[in-house]
Length: 104
Image 1: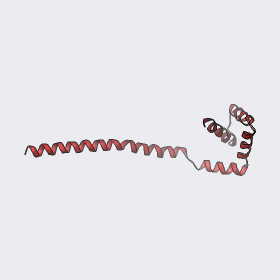
Image 2 (image 1 turned 135 degrees about the horizontal axis):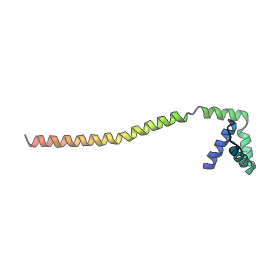
Image 3 (image 1 turned 180 degrees about the vertical axis):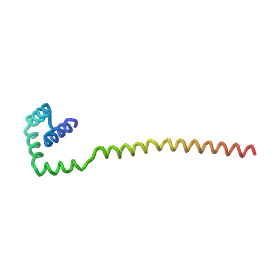
Image 4 (image 1 turned 120 degrees about the vertical axis):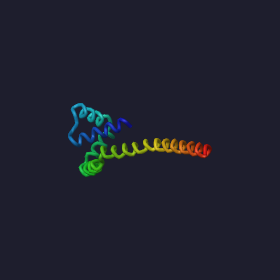
């Protein structure tokens, strides 16, 4: 699975003309490894497919997604403390009320 992700990144960088010499060599080796790889690369490189895929990729904003997820994680982490503090306050209140009723 890691190899698929890595190869996908190489193909995207190829489309954007952002491959280093080593990455270009690695992509060429992947395409040369099998006819299936070459056919997949050629299919993905067709202009209509390429425009569609690049358009879909550009609508995702990883930084915004991470901020939203990390914000949700922060809220979820704070919730157990609220419950613990509420429990302690209720326990102390019960102790104070019991003491007050017994010492009147």
